[in-house]
Amino acid sequence: MTVLPVRLFGDPALTQPATPVTDFDRELHKLVRDLHDTLDDQQGSGLAAPQLGILRRVFVFQLDGTRGHLVNPTLRFPDEQEQDGPEGCLSMPGLYFDTVRRLNVVAKGWTMRGDPLQIVGAGHLARCLQHETDHLDGVLFIDRMDAQRRRAALREIRAADWHTPPTVKVSPHAGFWQR
Image 1 (cartoon, rainbow, N blue to C red):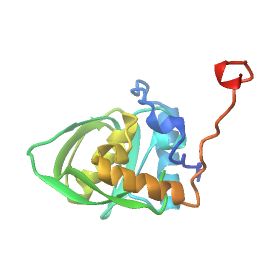
Image 2: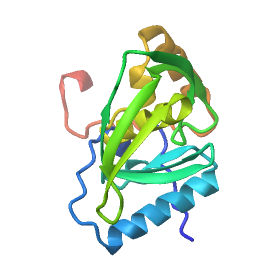
Image 3: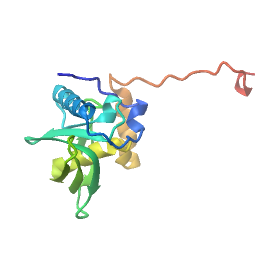
Image 4: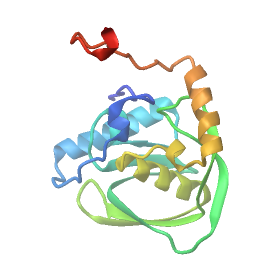
């Protein structure tokens, strides 16, 4: 069992697009196992490789008795129905914010063995599939919020005990601001 540290909000890996998987090899199998082990340890619904600092297009999920993974996912929305409700993220532990998502989704991709896979999701599963695919695109769920919700979420994130403010460095080179 390999449990890896989950990157927290502010880590640059969380805002970088992941690279498509081209080799369905032992390394990919190990990554999927590590993602599942870490997800089990964190007791979450889903976990994407970028949340471990690994910029590969793969995620795992476990909710409502369904456990799985998806490699190189693409999403299609069969209708315009939306849901608005609480959403959390292991990269923002303990915080939940109302977020609008599509109610229904069809996710297509591959298994770790290279077999084609389609997952049809509604409700919570649809939310999870969209959330984790966003991670692979370098998008965080707060990016999906309207301005008012995002400001409130950022206030809560800055107040969280796990949040580390960014380090601001002063240039050693003389400039007009140092005169």
